[in-house]
Image (cartoon, rainbow, N blue to C red; front, side, top):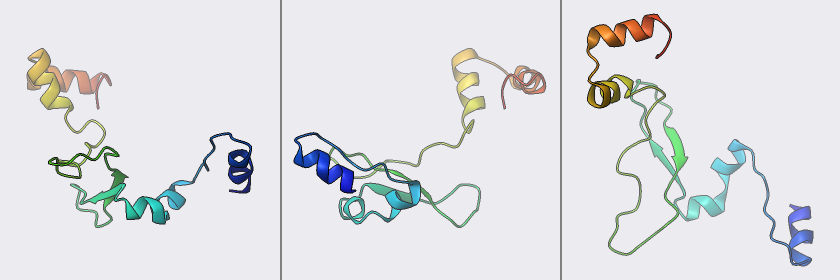
Length: 100
């Protein structure tokens, strides 16, 4: 933080590089609702924390419409819709290690 102050005093834009635990605990981000907590779909009680949209406009609701997807959560859905793959093709791709 001291280096940020010194760089700022010299006319240079600077900001701290925070660890994830520091970001989550940052009062500035909390006051501006910059972090959103959503329930996990896998039953784990600890919520998922992710950045909120920094752009705020009147008449537009704050916050995300839904949570961010898990890794590979929509793989089957996307491959069925975009490539017209069926269960057999998806199974074969998984067996070959092409998709998870």
